[in-house]
Length: 577
Image (cartoon, rainbow, N blue to C red):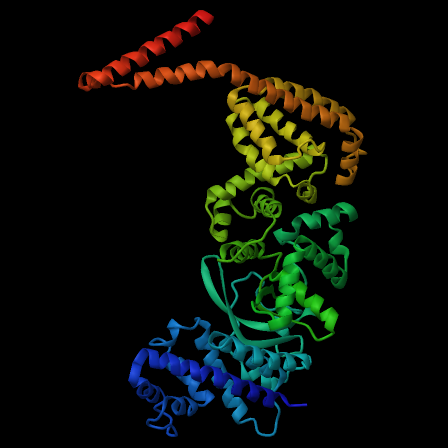
C-alpha cells in the first residue's frame, strides 16, 4: 500500500499537468509574446528556468511550486479574472504542503495533512481542469478511507493557523468540558481552514476545527425543527427531551431533521460522500450546533454506515445558551436568514420561530430580528400577524403550543391570503367570525382548494354579499362547538376522526358556500344591465362635441345615424321597463 506522502506527490503530479497548461494559456493571453518574460519576472528567485524556447518546452519547465507561486504573484494582474477568490489561498496552502513533502525524509505524511492537501488540490484543479480534478479526487478518497482518529502534536502545529478570537461572552473563562479545552486531542483537531461569522454588526474570522461527532449535539432551539419538537413533547410530555441521554436525544432530533426535508438530506449526504464536508458549521463551546444540523445529520448517517471515525468541521464559539441566549439567537438569524443563500425553512416553522422570539419570549424586538435576518421590518411584523392567527387556530382546537398540528393542516397560505380580507372588514365581530369560519372549514376538511376558498371569500366580502353566508356559517360553527369535546382535541388524528364522523356538517359548509356564490353571481347578472348602461353614459360623456364642426358632411351624417339608433335602443329599453 502506498504511503500518504506518495499519494500526495501523485496528486501534485496530476495538478502540475492541469495547472501548468492553464497558467501558460492565461499568461500568453494576457502578455502575448512577452508572456515568458513575465513568468521569469514573477519567479526572479529561481535560477533553473530557461530564458526562452518553444511554448510547450517552456510550460514543461515549470514545476508545481513555480506554478503555485505564479498564481499568487500574478493574481491581481492575471488570475483573479479567471479563478474564484479562494484559489489564491489554496495555492499558498499547497505551496506550504509542497515544502513539507519535499523535506519529509523517511517519515510518512500525517493523515489529516494528507487529506487536507488532496482536498485542496481537488478544489484548485477543478477551476482549471475538471478531468484532472476527478483524478485527484479518487486519490483523496483513497487517503480518506484509511483515516484514523489520532492526531499528533507535531501535525497540530503544522497548521497552527488563526488564533481563537477572544470572547465577549458572559461565559468568561473556559469552563470544564468546553470543546476549546480539548483542542489537540483526538476529539478536537485544529485545521488550516477559517470561516467568517457575522453577527451583532461585526464580522469575525474564526479558525475551523474537526470535532468528533460524539461530543456534539443538536440545537433544540432551532426554528427549523420547532414544530417537530412540539409534536414529540405533546406525545411524551413537556420538556421530555431534556430527560434523554445525549445519544438518544441526538437520535430523536436526527429523525426530525431527516423528516423535515428528506430530499435535501439525501442530496447533501451524497455530496458529502463524494467530496467531503464543504462548508464549516458553527458550534458553541459546549457542543451545541448552531449552524449545520443537516451536515451533522449526514455525517452521522455516513458514520453509522461505513464505520469510519466521524468528524464535523466547524468553528467553535465560546458562548453559553443560558447566559448568551439573545446573542446566540442573533447569530443563528444572521447565519440562517441573513447570508446570501437559499433558505429552505418551512413557512410554518419560520413564522412560529419569529413569533416565539419576538412575542412569546420577547428575546428580540421586531427591529432587531429584521436587522439580523436582513429583511424589512414590515415583513417580520406581517409574519407575526399570521403567527397570531395560527396561535388562535391552535387555541380553537384546544391544542395550544402544538405547532406541529398547524404544519400538518398546512394552513399557512390559507391564513396569509386571508389577512387582507380580515383587514378589509370594519366590524370586530365580523373579523372574529371570518377567522372562525376558516378554522372550522379547515378542521372539517371542507376546503378542497385553499386558493379558491379564499378567492371566493374575497369576492363575497368585496361585493358586500357575505352577510347571509356568515350567518349560515355561524350556525354551523355552533353545531360543531356543541359536538367538539375534550376527547376530540387529543391529536390531529382524533380531530380527523371527528370530521369524518360529522361529514354531513362539512357538506353543509360546502353547500353554504356554493349557495352564497350562486346568489352572488345572480346579483352580478341582475346588475349587469345597469352597469352596461352606466358604461355607455360614461363613454358618451367622454365625446368631445367641439370636434363636430371639423367633421366632413359624410362623417356628420354617419354620426347622426348612430345617435338615432342609440335613441331608438334607449327608447325600447325604457318602454320595456
